[in-house]
Image (cartoon, rainbow, N blue to C red; front, side, top):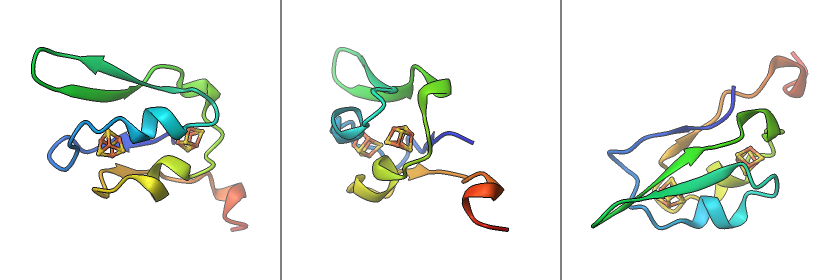
Length: 70
Ligand code: SF4
Ligand code: SF4
């Protein structure tokens, strides 16, 4: 499964958008906040960078079983 964003933790910093090597994450801009969303889920190859680098721990990824060698 591609990333899931937990809005209760997210501060809208935009780091996940900046670092995604697949350019799959974009930000929705509102008047007083920004919200990340996965614009191109099929482009995500589960590299884990967004989850690893999110400073708020606001991203979860369920990695495909074949990536976990199980
Ligand atoms: S890096 Fe984390 S806190 Fe920043 S916009 Fe993305 S999900 Fe939100
Ligand atoms: S897991 Fe990697 S490719 Fe997928 S959305 Fe996050 S940073 Fe982008």
